[in-house]
Image 1: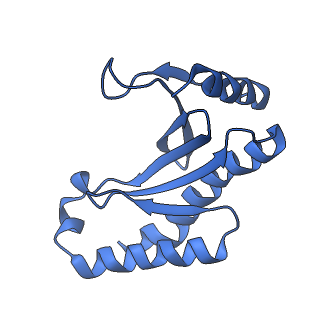
Image 2 (image 1 turned 45 degrees about the vertical axis):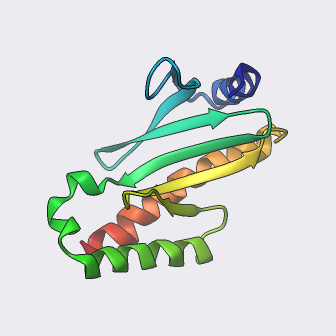
Length: 142
């Protein structure tokens, strides 16, 4: 993780008027990240921005299975949620849903670190589209 990549992202976020903080999630031995939030409908989603010499990666967790005890017991419903996320990947431009090894669901955007401001803005804003899709089309399935 280089500060040059994060500095570029910080410049872009400043230009977009998006507040953020710099942090070291996971401890001092971890590379720095930028943290911001997407707020909608009374909910807040933490947005984590990571950058290195080649890639900028932006992620927002939309489903935390460790906080959804009832959902964890319903594998059929979990599969339906994952299916709807994949449908979103297919139909929504620039929106990517992903899951970690624990089954948590994310909306993410990955781009080359040479990205222009306009492309970064489009990719960054795709998180909002994905989160809104999650709230409108996926979450009601619970």
